[in-house]
Every structure is written in C-alpha cells, then in structure tokens.
Image (cartoon, rainbow over all chains, first blue to last red; front, side, top):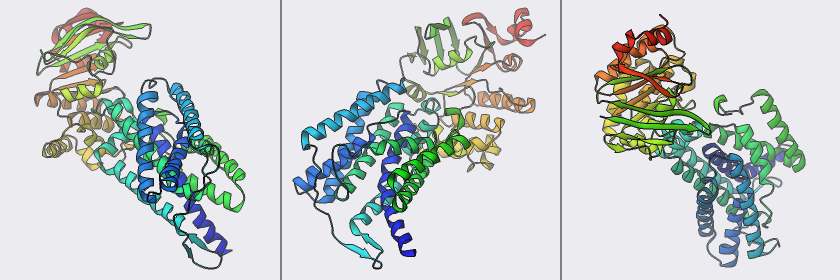
Amino acid sequence: MLEILAQTGFNALYAASYISLVAVGLVLIFGVMGVVNFAHGELFMAGAYAVVALYADLHMPFLVAVGIGLAFVGLLGLLMERALFRPLRDNPLGGLVASIGFLMILQSLAVMGFGVRMEHIPPVTQDVIAFSEKVRLPVARLYVIIAAVVLLSALWFFLKRTRFGWALRASAQDPEAAALQGISINQTARIAMFIGAGLAGVAGALTAPLVSVNPFMGHSVIITAFIVIIVGGVGSLEGAIIASVAYAFIHTVVTTFWDGVLADIVGLMLMLIVLIVRPTGLMGSADRA
Amino acid sequence: MLLELRDIAVNYGQVSALRRLSMSVPDGAIVTIIGGNGAGKTTTLRAMSGLAKLAAGEILFEGERIDTLPADRIVARGIAHVPEGRRIFPDMTVEENLRTGAFLRRDKAGVESDLDKVYHRFPRLKERRTQRAQTMSGGEQQMLAIGRALMARPKLLLMDEPSMGLAPVIVEEIARIIEEINADGVPVVLVEQNAGLALDLASHAYVLETGNLALEGPAHELHDNEHVRAAYLGV
C-alpha cells in the first residue's frame, strides 16, 4: 500500500507539473486580459510539435528544442494579443470566439504540416530512479517536475518582486485603477500573453517525448482550463497559481487510483462546490466577479 | 492655466453625459466641482485623466493637448487621479499599493523619500504596511488611495468623492489632508457631493447640473448663492 501511495505521489507530481504550467498560463491570460483563451490547448500542442520538428526531425539537442519551443509559442501568444484580443478588448465574448477560431487554425496547420499520425519521439533518457521494485521514477519525468518547479518559482518571483510583476497583478485586480498609476494595458496584456502562451508551449515541449503527440492533443486541456479559472477566481494571480497546482494534483491522484473520467467528474464537482460556497472563486474578490 | 477644458462633451453610447463644458484650473489652487447624482462630475474627472474619451472639445495641460492620450500617458504628464470608490488593489499589501503609484518613476531615492513622507502623513498606513489592502477600513483605504496618488509626485491631483461613506470625524481628517497637500504646492480638482466641505476647501467652484454647467465662481460667492444654498447646502 505504501508503495502504491509513493508511486501515485510521483505520478501525480509529474502530471500536476505540466498541467499547472498550462493552467497557470491560462489564468494569467484570463486574469490580466479578461478573455478565456480557448486556443490554450493548441498552444500546448504547438510546443510539442516544436520538439517534433527540431529534436526528432532535425536532431537538435532536446533543451535547445524546448527553449525554441517556448519562444516560438510565446510569440504566437503575442500574435494573438495583437491580432485578436486587442481589437476585441471591449468585447470579452469576441475574444473567446476569436480564440476558438485560432484553435482551429493551429490544428489545421498541424495537420497540414505533420499529418494526423501519432508522432514518435525518441526518448531523451531511458534512465529510471528505482526506489524499490514497485516505486520507480523515470528521469525524463523528473526533468519535467524540475522544470515546472523552476519555471513556477520564477513566475512567482516575477509577480511578487518585480516592477512589471506588480503591474500585472494590479491590472488583474483593477485594470482601470492600474491605468491610473501609469500602467499600460497594452504592455501588461503583451507580457501576460507571452508568459501564458510560453508556459503552455514549454509544457507541451517538455512532455512531447512522454505523451502521444497529435494535432488534437490540446482538447483535454479545455475542461481543465474552465475548472481552474472558476476555482481560482478572478483578481488574484497568486491565488490562481495555487488553485491550478492544487487542482492538477487532485485530478492526477483520482486518475491514478480510479480513472480519468472520474477525475473529470471530481474536478467538475469541486468546481460546483466552490461556486456554491464561494461564488467569487477561492481567491477572487467580489467587485470583479 | 495649468489645466483647461474647452467645450468638452462626453457621451456614453447614445446618452450625453457632459455637454460643452469649459473650465480652468490655475496652478496652486483647489478647484471644486459640485452637483447632484448624475450631474457629470465624475465624468469630468474621467475625461481629465483619459478614462473617458471626448466626443467634442479639447483638454490642455500645461498648454499641451492631452485628450488624445491614453490614461497611462496622462499619468506620465503629471496628473494623478484618486478615483471614486478608492479603487485600491485589494490583494496587494499597503506598501505594494503605494509603490505601484510610483510605477513610472525611475528616481529610486525620490520614491523612497516620498514613501517616507506618505507614511509620515498617514501613520496608520505605516502600521499596516504589510497588510492586505482590502482588510482595512474605509477611511484607511481612502488614505491609501490618496497616498498612492501622491507617490506619482503629481503636478495636479484629481480627487473624486474622497468623503464618500466615511464617518464625520474621518471626513474632517481627509479635509485637513487635502489642505495640507495643497499647501505643499499640489493643485487639486475636488469632486464632492458634500458641497459644504468642498466650498470650504476650494477657492473656485463649478456647479454641474445634468451634464451642463449651471454656475461658476469664487467658492465663497457660491457659498452665499441662494440657488446653491437651497439645492446643495440644505439651508
């Protein structure tokens, strides 16, 4: 029993790592810009295909491919901000619909470029840390965990300690009051989109050798997205980060012990409970809900 | 003139909120805008700070047009706005709120000395500097909103209903603070429903009624004006 718990703990830690990277980016975008980015799963997918192209096909070093993937998807985020969300800023539903369109464009591009087959990516490392017969942690997974911890810590430091991090938090809490402090909404929107998209891209890139990469792999992200945004609430970026990490962990534990469908149900139930008990979300403030 | 509004009009959709308003704020003065609910007082301030776009007219600050600039560029010119309802950042600490007010400033030493000044002026903010802003009382939040605006080291301070919802003793304290800030050389545009307070503080006053300028003049004259006394001072 103890061994199963330990193994589940590792599995949960791994899955929570990349899901939180995706979810945190999503809540960052929602918090600062007020739009639900439906294409977020496809940004994750784009990061994975960056690794397919650069690492599997062109044989670049894995970390270089991941780095380029982060930058490439971050730039996709900047493109979305400029072309879709900025013109539609006063129309949150418009931003949502435009992001659904962008989702389809990215999916089609992936199909056109790579076909609908599952991609086979050579493993980065086959090493396994064996704690016992039944408790084993593949090193490739450990890398994902380390990367997530480093990136999320860096994001936390950025939000808490830097001038632009404060600007992002202020914009998320009250965009108009933030503008009255001299904070440019266009600038915070760009920063949020670059970081949010980049984190989704890096999550896709890091996990590409461990999952089945295909043009439709972003689908499962959407439900997660909704739950995390609602549970995390509006306004507090730090709260949203905590909520997304917690959700990712719970979801993975349920998936490991039972199955993924039940995990989705549990996730949605948790969301309903939060909505009943705290309609503004765990960390949200009432004046923006 | 430090600030000049020339025939400005503001619409919200089809609704006209402000029609052909002209006013001017001389350097060093406290100018007040009084009027009832929906008279256009808040809209006038929002036009000055760039939150409301003009349908007609122009706004000049230090002789240059600012009505075409976005709000964050107007702050850079030196206009700070304490908005209606205080609008502090609820999940940030008191000190983070204050430092956010200095977002555009690069003179670190100046920011630190201004922070000291704000803490000196509002000792309660210093006591609560690491506390989340939303946990404070209304009066403390108002002081935080004022302190945050001062952190921009503004050339002109816009204040929207600083007395709203506060106990009379706190209102008196806010009034004293406004006088102090002005005595330190910062001109103030004060929007108030509490017309008695506003006319006591200001040297010049504008009276708005349903989006139109009804009266203007030296504050002490308006204080004795029969219409103002009947409509706004309740005597």
